[in-house]
Image 1 (cartoon, helix red, strand yellow):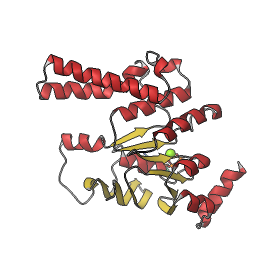
Image 2 (image 1 turned 45 degrees about the vertical axis):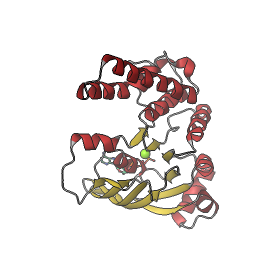
Image 3 (image 1 turned 90 degrees about the vertical axis):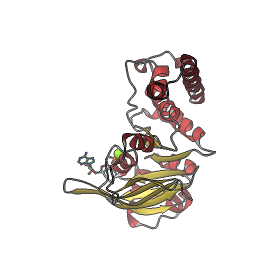
Amino acid sequence: MELLKVEGLKKSFGRTDVLMGIDFSLQKGEVLAIIGSSGSGKTTLLRCLNFLETPNEGKITVSGHAVYDSTDKKRKSAKEKRENQLKFGLVFQSFNLFPQYTVHKNITLAATLALKNTAKKEKMTGAQKAAALAEIEAKADRLLAQVGLSEKKESYPCQLSGGQCQRVAIARALALDPEILCFDEPTSALDPELTGEVLRAIKSLKGGDRTMVIVTHEMEFARNVADKVIFMADGVIEEVGTPEELFGAPKSPKLRAFLQKDKDI
Ligand SMILES: Nc1ncnc2c1ncn2[C@@H]1O[C@H](COP(=O)(O)OP(=O)(O)OP(=O)(O)O)[C@@H](O)[C@H]1O
Ligand SMILES: [Mg+2]
């Protein structure tokens, strides 16, 4: 069974139709790269998956459970909404770290707040809370080591390079164990010399059960890392296939023109 299934997803802003019926599915552990020219709807699609926009139509299913269904008019409880949101993690183009907190606190903040709620609801003892907190902190340490930033634990975002900030943002997204980790052009705000370290960090996450959706304009990276590539044009999926198919033998004239433009730059 697919981990993620998107069916007939549509989104308009006013009279502008941005997504005009998006359908795709992903298996657990698969990496999907989404490419396409500016304004084709890539960010809007990621924002719909992450509940930052509400689609107008369609259905999003994770592990057989509908997290969004436009035909279902029943209101979801706050708890259900929160659970659905936690299935997805998003790393933004512009990092969006909290400038007033250290690297370590940026990573532990969301989990610590969630723990406070749970502790109250489940009437956890002081010792249980301390153990859960220690686990959150230990996990942040592990994630920082994974993205190669252990020594920056107590630094503030303003003391880091853009590439380091983005690696912290990746560790922060992983701290909540999302089933599907999404990236929106994770290197486009970086100087070219910092791009490689972030792409390597993302590549190192591939494997096992980690399912990722990566919007990128780094064609070489998409080719190397993705199991499946979607080319979006004007709010629809113009072509989908393996990297070999899309980059090696593109069928759609729009995709061919897009890839040619990339080569010309
Ligand atoms: N909140 C909004 N209100 C109105 N229009 C919007 C909004 N968000 C996006 N759009 C429009 O939707 C279209 C698709 O935008 P989107 O950001 O999804 O494109 P994109 O493929 O991510 O482009 P880029 O490669 O430049 O990031 C654009 O025409 C944009 O102007
Ligand atoms: Mg975008």
